[in-house]
Length: 551
Ligand code: OOB
Figure 1 (tube, protein in one colour):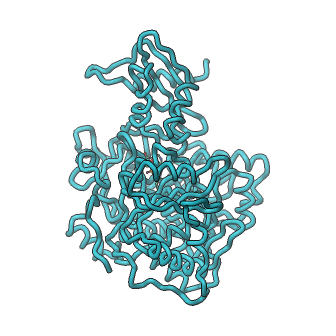
Figure 2 (cartoon, rainbow, N blue to C red):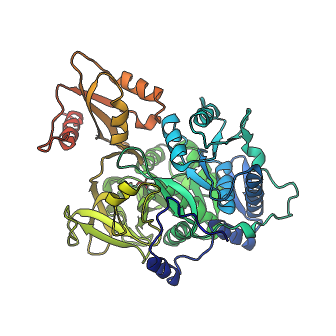
Figure 3 (cartoon, rainbow, N blue to C red):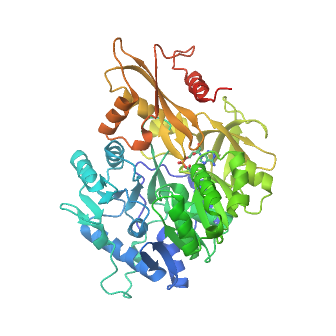
């Protein structure tokens, strides 16, 4: 075992780490080892389905280990970071496992990210390689990767699925079956240190650009194990992953990794679009799927058109990422025939879930409770004083799978972590039964159907426009996505601006499409608070009022 790198990674205090080991939460095994064990139990079982590819456990781990060897032979080293921007397909899973086996650290970018996000992440994590598909729909990801390489000197390799042009290297070749199938390349000597980072996840981002969250093998494996227990996963589980797999929720709560830990079958779909989703559930006899509320809504609408026959095998629908309205939650069981599991989680760690056998009232009107006895939770007022159950307050948490700081962000960490307690900025009520209800948030981001958009990040880009004097990005209510982004601006004298110009400019700047404003409000003067900050509360009320149906 190699010693973990501490560079930029905030470790847990030694006494907490010792306790987490004593309690059996940290098992000192790397993530890949859990999957190898499942493969040893039933090597011929189908592990991964990503049409038209079906891999057995034997094939999956052989490919992952062969790929790990090939990646290292190429020149990547354990602890090197690689930016991963792959859609939900078998390559994502095999490559991620190969990273977990080799100690190369995947930085989990989204397929929707563009130049603005990728160069930032590549620079921050000093990535040496970037893994992309050749294209998704009309978009040339390989060309995007080339631009990132040109901008960030540490990036030495582009790895591409599909049609690869020089200087890129074929990821499909790297991920191919070993030359001699069966001659297992078990890289047991290279199993990374369990306290070293397994992957870097992206935070929703409360200030400026997203922060990176370093998840160690020990903590992340426990995240997977604890959520797999609460979601009732077994080797009979068939999990459908349709949300972008680089998100913590579909990846590890319990998601694809949880399924592979217990010997189930993970089915990958690149989108949650209901026609294909329902057909896949029927064909593969999917037992559990995860969704954001907007997707659950689409599935319910679709069910009303086509009926629920194709969902007969679906036992559990997990919903999280943004607040599910109680009325929608109440419709899941009667209309889709599956037990709803509400999930209130964060890439920073803490995962709350309703239990499958909870009474209806808990399942429908709460976002559940922590998955581990090791999760500590406080609910506090603005002064940091604990409030009694039943009173709204800010949630603080620490525990065995909630890291104690972001990667290379000491100043931000001082604010986001207090004595090891992470403050997510969510306003919750803890009920006397321990379940949490999310009431709102005190962080400046827009939650667009589960995708988080930092208001400050958008504003900083908009300020590059000559015409803009003041800018404020706020969430506006949306019946489908929960929220969309509305941009308020005050213009320089004589200037004008329209929504299309802002969107075209931001696209030109290489910003992911989901961050583009969907409404523009030009005011003579933006309202200010007593201390001279833009009064966003007032702006949120203003746009909500404009959108409310006239009575
Ligand atoms: C998940 O993770 P992130 O990191 O994209 O976003 C975390 C934030 C939370 O702080 C909260 O503001 C919001 O997303 N959130 C919810 C929620 N689940 C997440 N707000 C209300 N109700 C919910 N059920 O979103 C995430 C990570 C793992 C599992 C599930 C979701």
